[in-house]
Amino acid sequence: MKKLLDMISDEVSQAFAAAGYDGALGKVTVSNRPDLCEYQCNGAMAGAKQYHCAPIQIAEKVAEQLNGNPVFDEVSAVKPGFLNLKLSSAFAAEYMNQMAASDKFGVEMPAKPHTIILDYGGANAAKPLHVGHLRSAIIGESVKRICRFAGHTVIGDVHLGDWGLQMGLIITEMQERRPELVYFDENFTGEYPQEPPFTISQLEEIYPTASKKSKDDGRHEGENEEQYQARVQAAAEYKSRALAATADLQKGRRGYRALWRHIMNVSVADLKKNYDNLNVSFDLWKGESDVQDIIPDLARRLKDEGYAYESDGALVVDIAREDDTKEMPPCMILKSDGAALYTTTDIATIVERVGLYHPDEIIYFADKRQELHFEQVFRCVKKTGLAPEEMKLQFIGFGTMNGKDGKPFKTRDGGVLRLEALIDEVNEEMYRKIVTGRDVSDEKAREIAKTVSLAAIKYGDLSNQAGKDYIFDIDRFTSFEGDTGPYILYTIVRIKSILRKYQEKGGVLTELSVLPAENEAEKALMLETAKFNAAMESACEEKAPHRICAYIYDLCNAFNHFYHETRILAEEDEEKQKGYIALLLLVKGVLEASIDVLGFEAPEEM
Image (cartoon, rainbow, N blue to C red; front, side, top):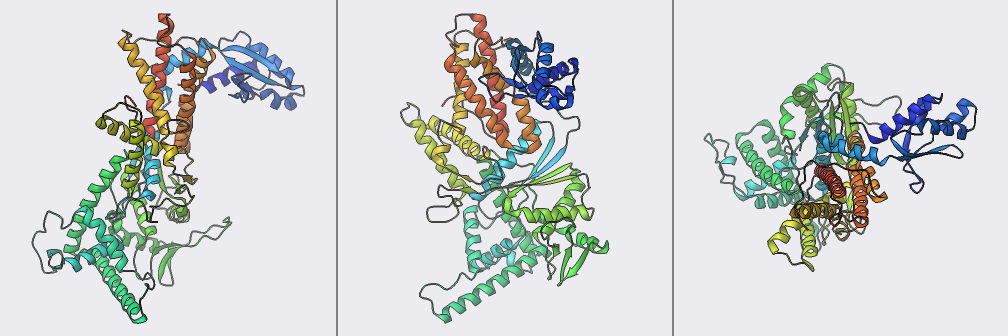
């Protein structure tokens, strides 16, 4: 279904052509003076020089051509050469009815849908999700839903960190604690236990303990030189053992591989539970380990084809270009000890994705400080032919979620806050607001609080442009007023309540049509609703959920203005009331589709 603004522009373009001018001058925009008109065209201003006459003369001739056009109620030429337009209420109502009858409310499907792989989440095995994982999960999930809604095939991959030193650290610490386990017996040839030797809680304690043991964290208070040196040496020895365990795991040692599988099974089950709490899901749960076997051949190929060479013992590929304005370091494929890096894994993952899925686009969501890393990876795969030239590679870097002090969000004692704890904190605040001054059961209040707090978190994040830092303010995000998730949900719940009461009075919610607007508030609501397909299209093209947030905030404001200006349930004219209800059904559907692509839903009551 054509966008409303394009339909209006087509009418004005035809009028320009009929008046003897270039039809391209007929582009229409939303008016920047809504007190004067709804839409405007400034084409006469641009055409004045081309046609050597005053712009008002052009505008007046075009206005004459539009006189009597059923698309418009009013068309006027205003000095020095603006065309002011007011849409026909009948035309606006008909557009609403076409939206209601269309699939996806009129969003046009692409002629050639793309296959898009989204790499988001950024989780690490054996480590709990913390607030730093929030933005990647929320933004990636929303972009996945937006692109699917727009008609593309989208594959979401969590791309787990599951193959690095953290695995060697866990194995080393487990061996210290429980050396009798069969995983550490190199002579064991039987079947390994089905049950893991740890719970998720134990695993999440094992890793930070091991990590701390492997590091020199400086001299401790009251520690003499001898004690300090002994501790430094112990840390170095511990890390050396962890590195050796990592190498043995990667070489395929049976016991370590069996223990690694336990780590992965326990970790992934916990990660899925936590992502479920965010209403985030992935089609693929692949990790760095999935491409380790192709890295040796990949490195050999790059060397044989003359792309990679040795530099200080490391294998690198030059990716600098003549037009670079700043230094671009070579892309390192293997370190001097032959070990692979994150860069290597990401390159190998692109090779695997191209082979398995033949994507048109691969999009990565990560902290914006990783921009150089992804630029190196993208340049390397394109230069070496590992990725097709026509395949689009995009990095969407997001800003930091900060506390009210403007610094990265922390716990009260300065630690990194677990994502689970943040969600619980918002849930409790939302629960407190819901039960205050309301007669509602505890079970119902908890259920509503969970739904609304997720909207508060997601909308609070997604309403910001991804690349910008933002302040995570629980008080503001959980408010039922202003540009917040709870305000959006409250509006939807208000519409649901009206429709429910209409049915209780005997009204039927089928075979209804939107009628021409009776007042300005009703027409304004129609014109905001009509922007849906344009908002969804731009959100998909720009991979920008904040476009949807801005749209639904304006739509909610327009509805609430209409609600306060109009007697809906008290309307005595039955046909007029049916027209109102038809409009409300459309607005509700559009809002629900919009919040679904943002990754949350509305309760039945609040």
